[in-house]
Picture (tube, rainbow, N blue to C red):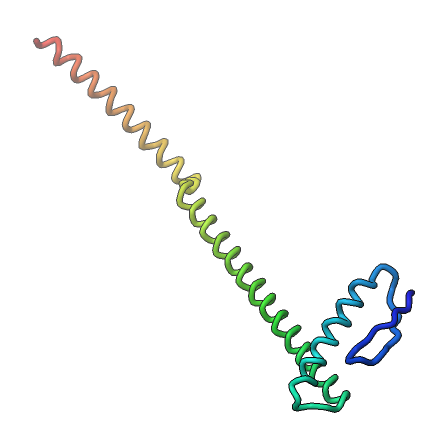
Length: 133
């Protein structure tokens, strides 16, 4: 752990920071200082405590807004994926004929056998007809 001295609203603070996280901490300090300075400079609030509370609330709202946007994006992406999956499955169902049932296969074979018998009878009938000519 490392200790870093920072300035927020022109007041010094010594903060402890995990090794390797110094840049993140300094960026967080910059954001807090900027938010607090903006509120103080607006002239409406002078108390450090009130400035800190208002800036914390503003930052919390920003985080909640960002989370809501990310959640909405994740929901939209999930809905789009669901629609894509549905369209893909419908397309696959339309492009592939359904597999015939065993009963349908048996009926097709029976009809094919009948058609073959009919063709044989026609051949026989036409054969005898040809002799007449």
